[in-house]
Image (tube, rainbow, N blue to C red):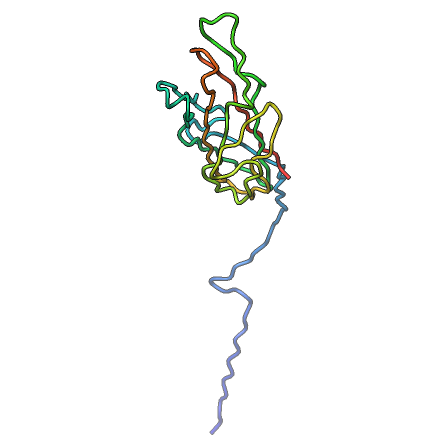
Length: 182
């Protein structure tokens, strides 16, 4: 009897049911950062804070001075920073009925104290967290080496001590804060 041998051959042609072909594309994205700093009052959310009025209504107010509530400011900076403070004039502007207008110097009457410091920096001398130091029309360092960040806050309080030397009226001056990157 003859044997019949059947040989089967399977030939693959490279066709698979789920075969995938991939390719890539790429590009470089550059973030072009610049130095950025902003100083605002948290109450208003702007660089202009609400007016602060120190009412002198009793003899004790004149004898001891009057202090304000805390005024909070916020620095947002991508670099460490300093904050300086000054009055915009050497003397208060007077509005009232006395003529000639009295001249009240800022330096001997208006003081500021840093009542809270969340900047990561240091309160600069002569300012402190416990006593008031007088303002002048020349920039004075208030906060040194504040740490960069998006919510670096500090609070100040004002104290007016005019004594009994000035007549009734409104005495006003702007206090200017300047934040500068290091």
